[in-house]
Amino acid sequence: MTEPAVQPSPQDDAGVDPRLAGDLKRYRVMAIITGTFLLTVFVGLLRYIPAIGLDEGPVDTFFSAVAIIHGWIYIVYLVTVVMLWMRMRWGLGCLIYMAAGGIVPLLSFFAERRIAHEVAGSVKP
Image 1 (cartoon, rainbow, N blue to C red):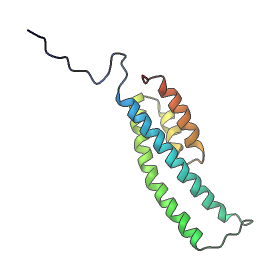
Image 2: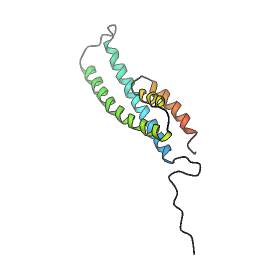
Image 3: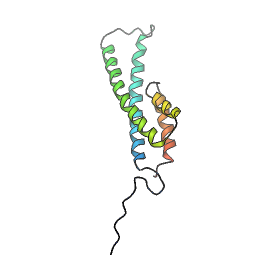
Image 4: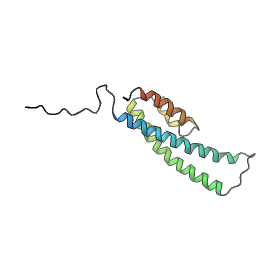
């Protein structure tokens, strides 16, 4: 008689969770989207510098809408951050660093590169 097929475990032979690659990809996409919207909001805030002197009007409406959209995108970004953070079992400092990427201009781009490089060692090619 033949033996029944063995069901693969949630983790492969090397002990790497196969869902980690998906979590990393979602994090990278959301980090880039969140960072882009944050930079747009930041540019919108430059109108409050007295030397620039932009008038209120369509510019204000556009950047207000972008700021609201960024807020909702940031919530999705936080979910992806927490998913990756829990999967990697990092410390609280790393969670704060990754979460700050959505509120500190340009940090999400640097954090995304650093985190992707660190996680890449844990993911099989």
